[in-house]
Amino acid sequence: MSDWNEFFQEKIIKIFTEKKSVIDIGGGLRVLQDRGNRYDKNRAWILPYLKKVDYKILDPVPDYQPDIIGDIHSLPFPDNSQEAIICIAVLEHVENPFKAFKEMHRVLKPGGYCFIYTPFLYYYHAEPGYYHDYWRFSKDALELLSKDFSTMEIQNVRGAVATWLKISPIGRFKLLMAVANFFDKALGKVSSRQTSGYNIFLVK
Image (spheres, rainbow, N blue to C red):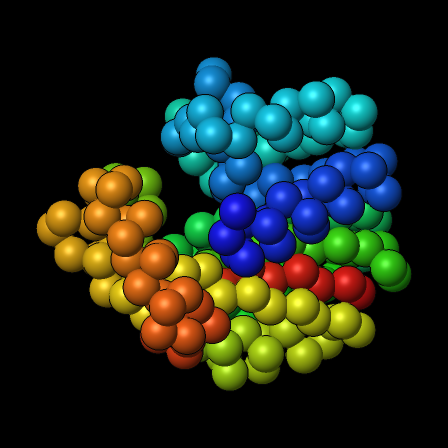
């Protein structure tokens, strides 16, 4: 298992075993086939954990059948009220990421968890009629945006060679991606600044 997938699995399990309620902004876990705008069968292992908590999807688009219709710029929750937030592949689509981070911090309880994934070197992926694609975030930018949280852990997603392959026309071929990951390890480029994006785990 790659370092970034191990980080993802470890933090998601931590959230679902240590907290009793989880707000998934944008439905980025993609584990419910009838909910959200995508489904990822590779994350089926998360389903048993969902059943143990109060898991709710928040999205501004009613077409995706969220539990809560809401905007990350103005989350519909009181201060210090939420135990955990998941925000996967959302922040590149929001108009004001500074406001989004402030809102997530505001609604989390002290000691609350927040898991984020956001891209860095990644292709354009707007959804016409639903959302735009505004931003890419460096490690420095994410550290600045997360400055109000007490703890931040960050893990790059893909090494330099795999990142280049991912944004190329042939990046969808799994065998080639396996070769790219091999070369990243061989060349010491797994923890490169040239990366597809970042997984982040925050504690308020």
